[in-house]
Length: 110
Length: 116
Image (cartoon, rainbow over all chains, first blue to last red; front, side, top):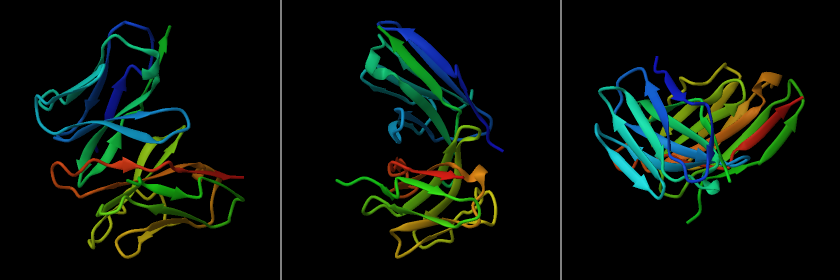
């Protein structure tokens, strides 16, 4: 059974600082997704990572995938308040069935 | 274009009643998924429809839960004899297909279900 672990579960950052969220998973998969969720809202797709070594960047967020280590990272550069949200990683177990991590609550303080 | 839509947005029901939740996927998307999000269990897969293939029901928590997809588009998730532990946000998602480059799942706003 695929298990997905995220850490940290809660992250309080100062504006302008850098930090990384980690996503570990327990069985082989070559599809990993990052989603963002604002309070009371649905999930917004951020990144799709489909191969070992894949790196994608959008604004202050950069995601990478190491399928051998079964690890993905979401790196935040020079955080701003607008990035405050909950971030989920999700791994494709099979047939596009996603198994989600518990989520990382990110709070960026001015 | 229009995203995934779900109705109702909120539903309050009494224990033991049946409820139906509706999902309209993005036009042209052949794959449709149901998940639920609760404080205790996080985000859980429930069921997956792909085209005309038999659905993957492996995530349904009990036989009180069922879903159908009519005409390859709209889907209805039905919960019979609701229990308090069914209270959650039920999210629907759709994607073009499972093929590489088309597999991203786009989520609807969800239905918040409260069972009293």
